[in-house]
Length: 88
Image (cartoon, rainbow, N blue to C red; front, side):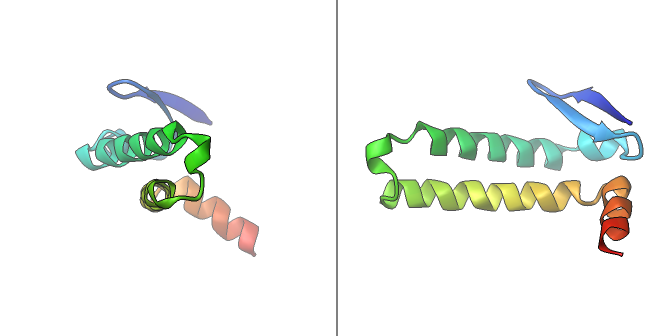
C-alpha cells in the first residue's frame, strides 16, 4: 500500500514500511530537488542543441541525479523484498 508524503512543494509516493524520517531527511529533499532541477534543465534545452555540448552536460547531470535518487529509494525495505522475489 502506498501513501503520499507531502514535501515542501511536491507529493512523494512512499511505501508504508519506509520511515517518514527517511523520506523527509534533508538528504532526500536535496536529492529530489537536484533530480527535478537537472531534469528541468535538460528539458529546457532547445531542440537545435540536441546532442551538442550543452545537452551532453545537462544529460550527464540528469543521469547522475537519477542514479543517486534511485540508490536512495532502493533503501526502502519493500523495494528490497520485491527485488529479491523477482530475481528468484
